[in-house]
Amino acid sequence: MADEGADAPTVEPGGTPGNPGADDGSGREEEPYIHDPEGVRPHQAPPSESGFDWRGWLLVGVILVCFLVVPAAILYLPQARGFIESLGLTLRDAYLVLPLIPAFLLGAVAVWAAVKSRT
Image 1 (spheres, rainbow, N blue to C red):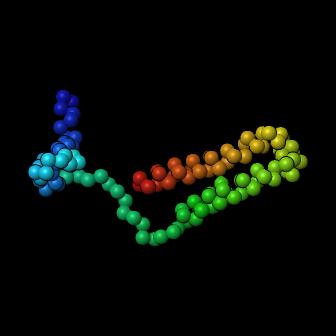
Image 2: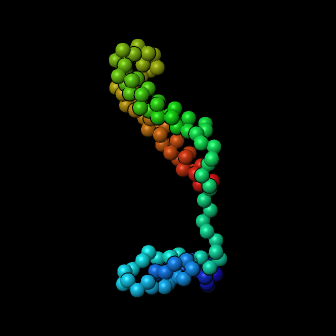
Image 3: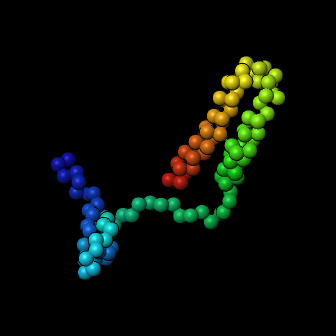
C-alpha cells in the first residue's frame, strides 16, 4: 500500500510514443504523451457497421414527441380544458407539467445513450 502510484501511467513532456520525452528542437512545448508501462490502452468499442438500427429510430421518435407532439399539445390545451379537468388538473397545472415530458424523455435518452456507448 505504500507504493500505490507505481502502476499509474507517467506523463512525459514532448516526444512521440516510440521516443517519449524527446525534444524536436523547435523550442515549442508539445502535448504531454501519456506513457503506460504495461502497454494497455483504454477500451473503446469499434463503430457499429450495422447503421441505423432500432436505437436510432427510438431517438427519432423521442425527438418527434419532444419537438412536435408536446408543443402542439401545449397549443391545444385551452380547447382540451374538459379532458384536463377530468384528469384532476387545472389549466395552470397542465401548462407546468406538459413541458416536463420532453425534459424527462430527452434526459433519459441521453443517459441511456451515454451508458450504452461505454459498453
